[in-house]
Every structure is written in structure tokens, then in C-alpha cells.
Length: 459
Image: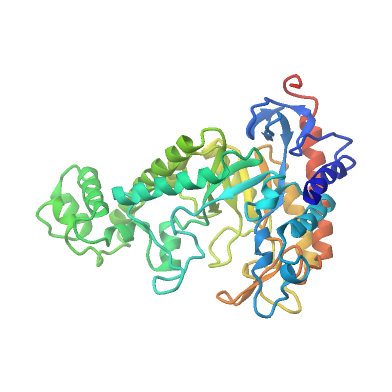
């Protein structure tokens, strides 16, 4: 009961912040009217793409990811979940709700069950193990580029989608589904990072595997069954295209123009096949809720991959910045040109699904986002505020989720993943103050642009 009471009070606290607007039970503005469909959806209101609550009111999602890691402390970090909250999710949720009310936040991730029944949230599931943070094959948590042409893999994916949807489809607080987090699609960047890529993994599958057979048929069609032209391009001497399903292809010169061009095209085949499995499976298992698709790193969204995803998603989820290799788009300033280019191509709204600007602390000189790291909390706070203000000047930005809630040290990365609060639960005050100001400005900006618009109220 105390959590539900906190939820009611926290919406009331928003009223003074957003030009006197009143809110529905999901946090939507009652004077910004769209269709009442019983589910979150997207509408264009006065030229702005806007989330609309199940009750039919405009809503901007502002939240924090990874709330549940409060329980996962390191050996040198205090166990505040046990010591302060007595390992009780309701007690922790009450604190989060109070902080959300103070910091002008309204959206959670799916990591705390007690919160996703009373706050709008986004549900995420890695259907394939292509996320950037998976380790090497010999490590405990290895990456995998599966053979999506194999019926057994396809059945597994469909089953996983069904189980995922079953967990969330009856929850009206669900905004949308995400798929794999930080997928490594870009061939050249993935090779630099992993010494392999999805195309190379398919090419290296066992003889006569489904993926190898599909790759051979792709090349046969691409070269119009002209074996001489293919052999010249690949510096091979095969006697028929069927041999591509059996011979060792690991020694190909991947720097050759023709091979690189073909690899890029086959990457699109992989993407269309993969998305063509999980996309329809999601619509079948939950036809009512939105899908935002994979949580792409900005700079790792090849054109052919994005085009393959478009029939299956309602918006594009983007993470600006990267902490692994310094060849991705910087995330410490709003990457206007890059995001604008994605929007022009996709013609769909953009959701900034995971982002932060890191900074050095006395205890942790390096964060897990070391590239373009700011020198101090004050600098990062100012940059975060500016980022949000610039982002929401764009009428196609639906929301913003910060990464993450509480500091957690990564042994594997030998760096800190910074939160809004330290590992003892005390806030980073400059960062919190900047977040509050930015969120208030964003809510006022959007509300002023769209209020008193749309369809008549539906009571």
C-alpha cells in the first residue's frame, strides 16, 4: 500500500512543474488529448511525435535504467539494499518514487517488478547474444552470432519471444518492447572489436549447415551463376557454387572490394531473416503494445540493418556514445547530424534509450565510458543538461532514459559505471540538480508545444 500511495503523491508533485497541467494515472497531460486505446502508442500532435498514454493523453518518457542493480553490489561496495532497505523491493521503490518526484522523472525500466506495475516502463530482452558487453568465446558470458537460417534457431527465437511477451502483455504500464542491447552489427567495427562479425561467423559454420547453404545460394544468385566472375572476385577455383557450403572459407581476403561489398549485402540478408523471425513473433504474441526494437549504439546501425528493422518497429531506439572503442559517435554532446540522418532514413520517431555523460571522481578516475569523459561532476552535469535540451528541440524525440541509477564498479572493465547516486545511496548533487532542471525544461517545452491540441477529451 505504501508504494501505491507514493505513486499517487509523486504525480501530484508534477503539477506545479508543468505549467499547472493535470495528469492521468500514467503521468500523461490531461490537456493534451489523443486517442484512448487502452495501450501506450504514438501520435503526431501539432507536428510533434508524442507518446500517448492508455487513457489518451500526451506523455514524454524521462527515466533511469538499471534500477535493479541496487541489489548487485561489489565486495568493496556497501550493500544498501540489505542494510537500508532490508532487501525489500517495496521499501526501495518508495525511495525511488520520492526521488522521481523530486527529479521530475516518470519512467522506469523492467528490472524492479514493484515499480513496473505503477509506472510507465520499457521491457528489454536480448534474443541473440550479440550485445557489445558479451565476452570472448572462452569466457563465462560469451557472445554468439547464431545461424538464424537454421529452423531450430528460429523455433528457439519464437519460443523466447512468446515467453517474453507473456510476462508483459497484460501490463498497461508497458510503453514498448526492446530487443538486444548494443548489438554489434557494423562489419568493420565488429571485426576491430571482436576479430569476427556475423557474416564471418556464418561463413565459418560447419559444412552443409543451413547458414553455409544460404550463403552459397546468396553468392550464386548475386553472381548470376557466373562461376568465372565469382572465382576472379574471390581468388578461388571452385567448380560449382555448391562447394561454398563445404570448403574452408576462413582464408578469404576480406579487404577485397568485391568480398566486402558482398559481405555488406549478406549482412542485410541476416538482418532481414532475424528481424523477420522476432518481429512477426512479437506482433503475434502481443499485437497491442509497441516495439522499439534493438537498442542500437549510434554508429553501429548499418543502413541495410536499419531498413530491415523498419517494418517491425514503431520507433528507433538509440544509445549515443560508446565505452569500448573510440571510433563511435561521441555521446558527450548531442549528435544532431547523426540522429537527424537516422530519422530521415527511418521516418520514425527516435527514443534515446540509454545514455550518460561520465566524469572522473576522486575514487574512480575512469568510467566505463572513457572516451570524451568530462573532468568533473559539474562539467558532466552541465553537459547532460545541454544534451537533453538540444535533444527535445527535435519534434521526433519521444523520450530519454539515463544509464544508470547507482554506482557500480566493473571488475571486467576496471572502471566505474556511474549512477545518479553513489554506491552508498547519496546523490551526486550537481548531476541531480541538472537532471531536475533539464527534465522540467523538457516537460514545459513539449507541453507548451502540444497542449490544447488533438481530439476531444474521452471520458
